[in-house]
Amino acid sequence: MKNKYVNFISDDHLLDCIGNLHKAYLKAKNNITKKNFYSNKVDTIKLTFDAKFNDIDEESLIQSEILRQIDKSINNSIGTFHEQILGGIKGYQAGNLSGYDIKAKDDTLFADIKNKHNTMNSSAAEALFQKLARYANDYKKAKCYWVQILAKGSFCELWSGDINGKEYSHSRVYKISGDQFYALLSGQDDAMFQLYKVLPVAIKDYLKSTDKNEAIAENSALDELKVGTKKSKRSILDQITFENYNYYLGFDKL
Image 1: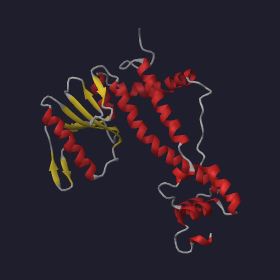
Image 2: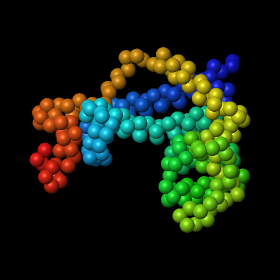
Image 3: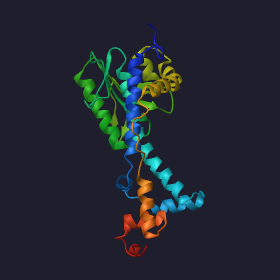
Image 4: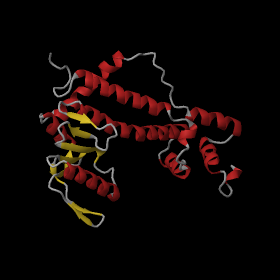
């Protein structure tokens, strides 16, 4: 029976991957309580500039900051989505915290997937190269890849160069763009494009199949802040600043 969505993984697998990502979205949205919102300390000086220079009211400003935190959490889950999709291609499997993100079942390929090309500093890049080189040395027939799902070009090339002042190269360690890696594993040049084109339909189908009564407890951070401002008579920004920095000199006067 012909697949409805893409040619390189089953319809059920694609819908399962979409479902896993949907759960990550729900968890991220539900997870922003005031306590979590404050966990990394809120930069209220920057937020003051944002409000004034962008002409945004404080409530909308905080809501956008909450959405930014949600988006940061979701970005990690998008990388996992690609790992799960690619792990559904015949002959390959996802790593599931095994040290690699994707491997060939016959140990001829190992890959580490990053959603964007600029997510690593030089120390992380050095550690990744060394890890891939170890796989290449341990498995003599293996090619090992640093996959950049969203890259600045379409490429598959040996990964060599200067990292932290040291020269690195290996005859079987490569860097590769997302489109080329999808093509490599699936045997179809347009595999990633297939996925992109079909996602709106597949997501719609998935959402139709979900329980509409599933509880979606939206983030509570803003509501908690507004309760605090009613009691204290402070503005939202002053409330956040006081609760984050009342131990700073003079800030207890807010």
